Length: 273
Image (tube, rainbow, N blue to C red; front, side, top):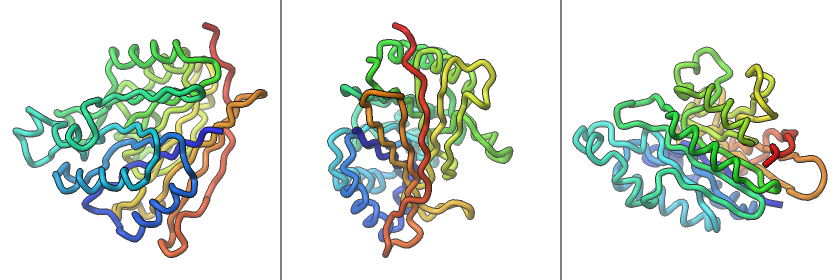
């Protein structure tokens, strides 16, 4: 079985130290094969915040990490930096690749950089990005769980969150479904949920799910959702393709992260080569 932990929106600079410690302990108990960081690792893209985020990731000790920047990981008040070198701090802390791909025998995870230097909050996916991801999905091995990772949500469930939805999300979802995507992971709005996209979008080619993460360790929680992370369990053996998604909440740092929900996602067979 492969285990994927999704951590989103920790916003280092606003982190709760006791929750950080609880999360480090929790991740060690899960022994994930892949850590997905779906953006907003810092609050204001400052050097000290990137250093704290990078040190936190090192403490987790996960053998494979796939990370993408969020809108908070681009300088807001440093206008020259935002326009000329928006990802300089990110690259120093997490490497040059802004759209990494992780591949193993049973996992394919593709990151999509949805932030833009001229957009303070909104995200978008371009036609070129849509096609790049689709072509990579089409080359996936039948045994692989196919994940696409964005920062801004590709699908929102509440009217008040609709302005935060990723621009060009619907054509992206249709193309990625046809190419074989199973799950689209996102963050940004600090609201965790799981949505069966094939029940919400007419004509989707196959079963595909949206899995959104809350804020992992930040004090910037919504009143209806506290600190949480997602755990995906992919058994990859013979039989029907199913993936379990669990949400783990930290209601009390003393008690640590506790499982709040567990949902089994039925997946479609891989599309023909």
